[in-house]
Length: 314
Image (cartoon, rainbow, N blue to C red):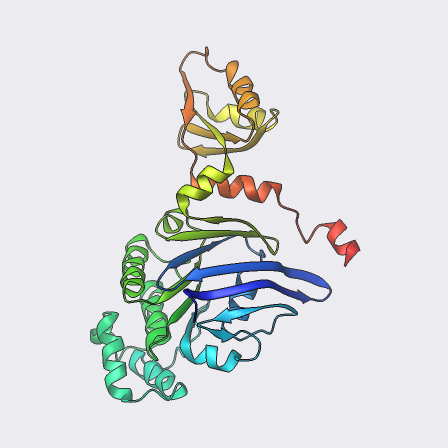
């Protein structure tokens, strides 16, 4: 087995004549946390399902955990933990009953001991007899992760696992993910939260089925080559729409009484800012690009596979 827990090339999948994953290459080293970023409908969930053996690719090849993604899909399922976007366990069973059921599905040896360990690890022991349907979002998330881990997988595939969860629960969840990675478990996690993306070892941006960028946070920021300016002060909000129409401006985002203005052409950006510098009450200065700036600029340039042209070609 190579140093990659995930090593796939050219993954492609279509539904109803529309390509939702288009020639995707993805490599993730063992014990790394890879953030999978992209808008809704970008192909993240379909990609994850192909990686864990739930969907067969129309084209492409490669391995997960050294196992062929097409010919050895069943073996991959046995060694991977997949956490879906929507809570998928039985709400009329208790936490413990759900975990016992999952342990039976995977024929986990020493089932009672494995359930006890999962309860302990995720802090679920005091609630083990509570019905899953009565849990808050954060506790459901803990149960779902415990279910993913009970058969001791070597690969975790997490599909927007913290959507709708409060900030403390999200932080606790990510602390656990980093502990798992330190133990050698590889994690591929899709997310819309930029603060979560910053906690990943590396990132992959995907939009409309195609990979747009990949690398560490520092590499992606450098590759994007964005020129970013901060416009802050009285009246800044009213400048958002005019700035969006200025040549060279790719995105304008509001943060309180400030605007983050991003573009690729440094000279055009300086020209767009020139008329604002002398306005009283405004602070206009260069700023560092953020992952959100990169995300928005990449999505803005990507070709929408729901667009009429894409449908006509299909």
